[in-house]
Length: 184
Image 1 (cartoon, rainbow, N blue to C red):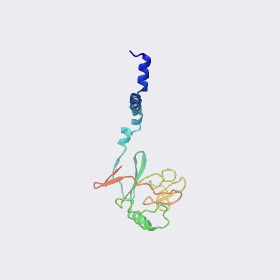
Image 2 (image 1 turned 180 degrees about the horizontal axis):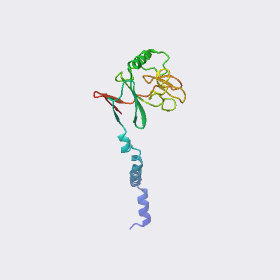
Image 3 (image 1 turned 120 degrees about the horizontal axis):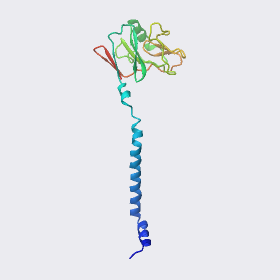
Image 4 (image 1 turned 45 degrees about the horizontal axis):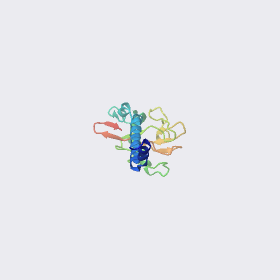
């Protein structure tokens, strides 16, 4: 009969059994760690109230020509402008202006020439530009004016003057035939 000393030596000397125990223990540790961390990883996902704000719908019928309204989408102000014929002509005329800081055509920024939909956050330091109310200063180009550092945007939301490096952002939106815009 073998002694306990001999049995211990047999177990520790078998490399196949030792490797199986190491890999098995490692696998259980990895799975256990993953299960323990899952609640923390899952908490990073957006909550139901955030997902509910992922799209915003606006009825455009009460918005008169020349009027601008602001809606909130994902916690950001979105400017919706029902442009006048003069504002459209000014925007189209500036398409080929070599002084545009961030060149873009008016047609590339709108789905329908009458309606402009832009995120109302200045691309310099994240301020909200003025120009939504008729009493606000709209700057030299008739669009929006950021009073923080003087950036000016035209009627197509393109930056024309100041330190802002980019045009006002375009949110994903859809204009529906029944005079509704769905943002997001």
